[in-house]
Image 1 (tube, rainbow, N blue to C red):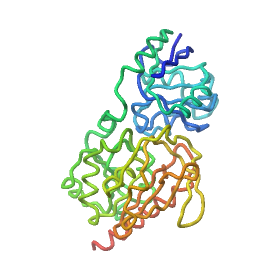
Image 2 (image 1 turned 45 degrees about the vertical axis):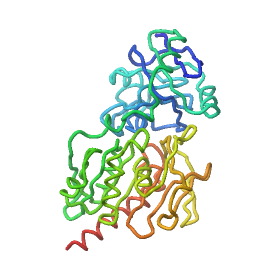
Image 3 (image 1 turned 90 degrees about the vertical axis):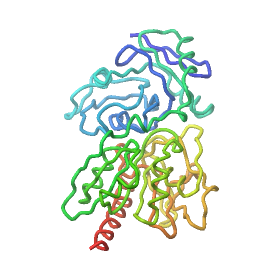
Image 4 (image 1 turned 180 degrees about the horizontal axis):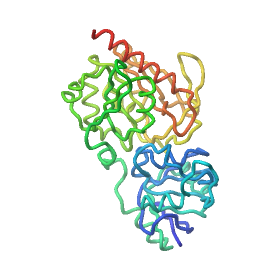
Length: 365
């Protein structure tokens, strides 16, 4: 099945189609992870984006469905050098080919992903389009150009839950409200593993409704797109700062930073991979982290009288974590719940969240 990928700069490459015939539009981004394609493709943070793997072979251990981070594939499309059609793993139930077909998604393989990665690093992230069932490069370029910028789209509204729901930890384990901007399942799992009862609420939930759940803390999840689109999340943090402990992961970190008066900006090509080094300034050690984001917090915009930057990316110096000096607010840019990626920071982050929830529980008695 023929296919073509076009970029807004006029570049197009022809290859072989994956999944179903059709047209895919989105922002082409690359991830450097070797494994974890099942988790990445189902991560709601990739909504609006075409995901390209720099590792040349994807799909060799198949798809099990056991590590999905949502109810299905959220990336708009898939780009790989080679996709394996004969996976070998005892948990595999289908190939990456079958997965894309089942999800009604399209992709392209047999192209020079190294060239596209270098181009992205030099030129910056670009709008792209894939046509599966055609090799018309000019049309692919036109479709790439003829789409809105990702920053103008309400991607959060497309991935947040429609209704609140609860997942029990253990009785007396404390309660946390998770604002769902595109939350990964392993965030909930990491909280449940520590006995915390989690109530997941839509991104548009107002303060009054959040407080009706009598939470011991608030956690803002990861998610796609420009954090400035999360106007309700910013408002909620402003209102509840000082009333509840507030924590954030990835997009949640950016939303909290905006609520505290900081600014965010779009990065040239972002951080996406499972080996991003983060310097913990308090402990003087470096954590290897899983990351997936295209926006970052401007350190110079933060009020250092109120906020302490606790962690920095050792590659480019971008902000990876911060805490408020007086209020119980802590957030990180990376994914402590991992999946995919290393678990270096899972215990560090979620143990602290659990500790604060327990303290709030005791104080309320």
